[in-house]
Length: 121
Image (cartoon, rainbow, N blue to C red; front, side, top):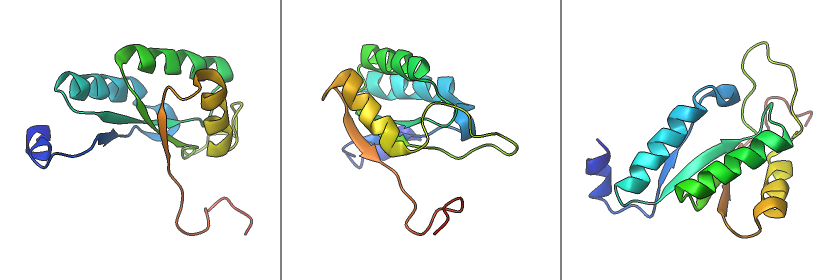
């Protein structure tokens, strides 16, 4: 299926994962495969429930894989999941990525076009 997409010559392929990072390892594996196939991949990277140390380790892993593009987002909380983690907003994640890695990654961001369901206004 990806080969059909590659025929369209995308600038990059974006790869997401489930709520709370539930399929993160699968996402990293898919990103690794896409890169090996000679196409740029943008790895979705959410921070819900994450710690600074876990994000630091994941950034190192992605950099070692040759990832140069991230889609930074807060992520949705799985049902019954508390706030948790050290990052409350995607902007916190972006700032941390820049502090830790400088300009090593091109960062895309994701946002709701309307008011977020958890926003007060």
